[in-house]
Image 1 (tube, rainbow, N blue to C red):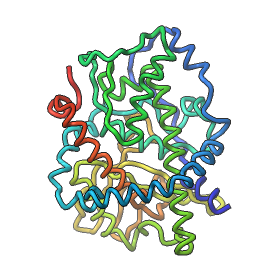
Image 2 (cartoon, rainbow, N blue to C red; image 1 turned 180 degrees about the vertical axis):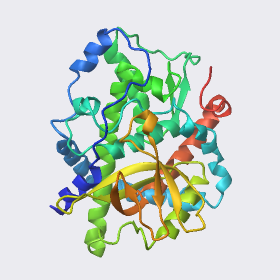
Image 3 (cartoon, rainbow, N blue to C red; image 1 turned 90 degrees about the vertical axis):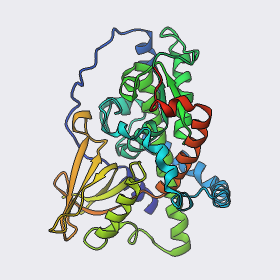
Image 4 (cartoon, rainbow, N blue to C red; image 1 turned 30 degrees about the horizontal axis):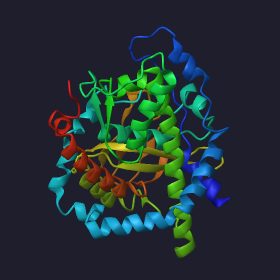
Length: 360
């Protein structure tokens, strides 16, 4: 029961306005649309997928421990890498994407797009946030297909789906990949096949990330007692520490992912929302500061949101009081993996890293 409540809390989301048109040209229905429309959901509902991933991750704990030990021996843990901060300059190559319209997913944390992939009642804010960051840190675009990849045609939707799914799966595993035939993430997620690939990736990422966190939480609880009450930064007590954490990571040219617990006005309930931090403004003379988020609940034009934290640590999201804000568990480890794999990619494909992530 405790596990189920934790999973439901972690994945809940707010109700937001209906999607707005973003001005991209429409296309004539074709064989791609037929393929997308008739593709089966990943599972009957969200909880089934999550349960499958939980037991899969539970069995992988020994490999997780081994990989952590290997990273430590190679000097590839996050704390070891930050001893040489110049290495994080690689992330600066693509950092401008955070402020460009073309590097947004063309769907949000609600609507039929996600429900057709897997009927859900909790939302997939964590999956959207995580995949958005991965695509913007690890995807390199070849719009004119200069590298001459064998891209299946529009009349081969099944093959085309598999072609792009393989590349997105690499990115989901924390490895850079080349996306041929598209200018940027917005164009890729506006294509019928590309959108379906990314929507399925969002749901899979949501299940995988939640399962990982749940396994870690259960293991820690067994070893040290209930950790739920001490997890996170309590606003009003740890605001200075929170500011320091976020500022340090933003200086390394990437967006840390945080979760916030939000109180609901009914039944003394809570839900947890997950977002990327884009910026933290300097602390004002009155002790307050602003955090700029990329909010997956919002459509593209509204996705950048600002949260005000006052000197006493009080803050609200959509008019609701925030209880805690902290880094997502495992976020530092994920970034260390991105950096090591990006270094390898840039040695193999230096042109992409010289040209800012895209070749024309």
